[in-house]
Amino acid sequence: MVSENMDVSFKEKSAAISLVAVLGVYGYYFYFVFLGTGPASPEEMLFSMMALVVVLVIVEVAFHIVVAVLSPREANAAEDERERLIALKAYRVSYLLMSAGALLVLGRILFGSVVELEQVTLRGIANLLLFALVLAEAGRYSAAIYHFRRGV
Amino acid sequence: MASRALPIINSIRRLRFDAEEMTQQALAERVGVTRQTINAIESGKYSPSLEVAFRIAQVFDVALGEVFKYQPQVSEEVSEEASEQT
Image 1 (cartoon, each protein chain N blue to C red):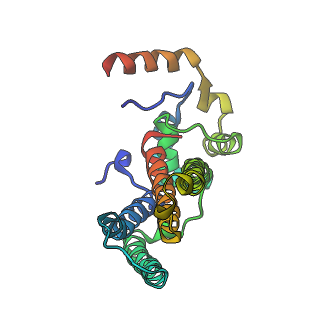
Image 2 (tube, rainbow over the protein chains, first blue to last red):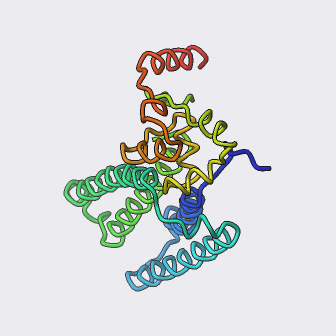
């Protein structure tokens, strides 16, 4: 018999799946960006981003189906007040990270263009924005898992 | 890292035991929350809304004060013990 204290809800499993998927898929992309071998043109970047979204959706849907099949009752259950509160707290973390990211991008555009004009490219800005978005999403899922584990 | 101790203690575990060992799942279904939320309330990791608290008391047919008690000093003692251990 599984101990009641060892319970992991569907929402927590979902957050864990999404965290791993986001980090895995975008980690793969940024690995090449930081190596300097990422997309070289806006067209390549657009294609990469669309491909990443498709891969992310496939990975998330596949794993969520597996988890839902293993615990169908929990997967179909409506979100309760604790889960809603956790989601709100997680979104707060996400908002703060996204705001910090937006400020960094703004700083990069305003100050970077003054200090090193040739370094500020639209591709660079797009990658920074995407990085901030990924960080915000990862922060949201991490915060949700934290509150599921440690309490609200 | 210790869990943050809440100033509200509860008797849900005992009440479930007295109600012919009602499971957390059964209580959760009657209250309208997930089993994990009942577990979190029982273990002091989550303070439910007033509505859910009343629903829990209604399931056991007892007064709200019999299910939940506000004891801030317990919380502080637990916190102190936790910080001494870490």
